[in-house]
Length: 218
Image (tube, rainbow, N blue to C red; front, side, top):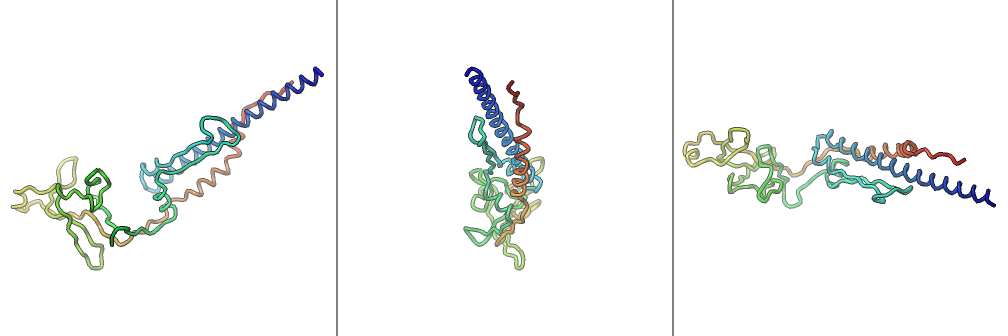
C-alpha cells in the first residue's frame, strides 16, 4: 500500500509538472506568434507607403489576460479597420456628402479650424482667404485661393497678402488647395490574410520550442 501510494504521489507530481509545462509552452508560443503577426503587419503597412501612424494602429492582446493556459489565444486587430480593409481589398471611394471628393494638395494646411484634418468645410478662410471653385473641362476641377504669397524660411507654406502687396501685386499667386474628383480608386496594397496564415503554420513549432524540460520521476 505504501509503495502504491508513493507511485501515485510521484505520478501526480509528474503530471502536474507536465500540465504546467504545457500551459507555459502554449502561452509563450502563442505570445511569440502573435507578436510576429503584429510586427509583420506593421512592416507591410510601412512598406506599402501608408505611413507609420497607420502601421502603429495594429495592436495585439493575449487571452486570458495575465495568466498561463493551454487555451491561450492571441488576437491582433487594428484601430483603423476601414482603412486597412480598403487597402486590403482595393476599393472605389466616392463622396458621401457631395458631388466631389476634395483631395488636399501639398500647399494646403495639414489641419483646419478646430485642429481636424483639413477639408473644404474647415479650411481657415479667415486667415488665408476664401476658396474659389475653378471648373476645368476634361480635367479635375479645383478649389483655389487667390492673392497668396509664399512664406520664406523653414516654416514654408503660404500666407495672406498684406495691403501693400495687394496694391502692387508683386509676389502674389493663386494656389491650388484641393483637387476635386468624383471618385478615387484605392489600389490593393496589403494582404493581411497571407501574413496571418503564414504565422499560424508556425504555431506548433513555437509551442514545442517553448516547452520547458520536465525532470523525470525516479
